[in-house]
Length: 364
Image (tube, rainbow, N blue to C red; front, side, top):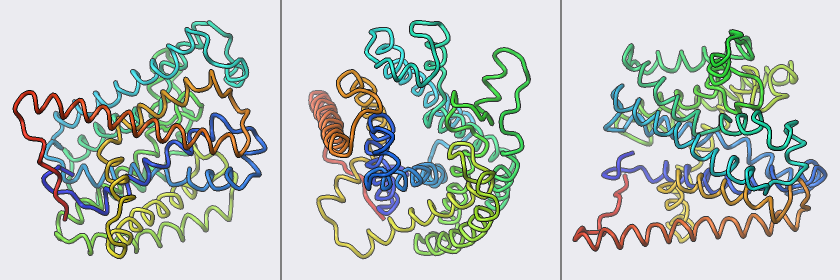
């Protein structure tokens, strides 16, 4: 949404998804196997991890309201976002690797020889959520050049989910182009979020954003979300039961059943944001979630740098429940404090230039 008109429930849902980044990522890096698989915290974080795509759904909704959704503007934004992803790879991987800050067992888990060219190449080119978001912006702006019909967009999103598993892992066998196909539909862990089918989460978000734009009522949009959520969970759940290994065994490279189920659950989580805002009075915690939503890119950047550099102090895959909880609390506070300081300096520069800082986003 543009700052002139924001939907509180969307900011609430995005803020909650951002807030869960540090617990999920910290547990993935720091917890030992036993803590991850059997502890109450590990079980809770595994559930929370399934809510990560909520951010992508909200990204699609926001795109429907963007004043820069034309192909050229969206493509430039997408390329910048993807570039930020590779810059982040340098900051969170390449630099600490060159300084010898990562534990040996982390390097052994990746199967790379310390100091090798393949090691640096792998981590610089690692495809993560920023690369997915950037390239998906370009994709959906291209789709809207061909058709702005919301049902065409919904149909393409569902088609993407259905065919992606069969495309998964296909390569042309040409150096350089192999990486392109990995970004599109790879099944290795050099790309965590291949566009097919993860872009479908953004596209279904765009579908709901267009629904809201057409009817002009968030209540109607959220009502439709609940219906679609129930349908997707029912179909995805049925497929999940019939063939778990094909549809859900690998979280990052699931089959259609897994993605339909996950899509329905995350649409429901976005709807929950609407319920929270509608029925629970505004409070200090809400302010934190709204802050997280506005600072989503900075939050993502800072938390990953702190988490990866933190391996020098806390190790890799070595912490129990108490250690993980302490790290999560510490890193969350540090991330928010750094963002607050950044905003303080930014406001100082605005004041020095004579600009007003009193303008705040309004909500509908």
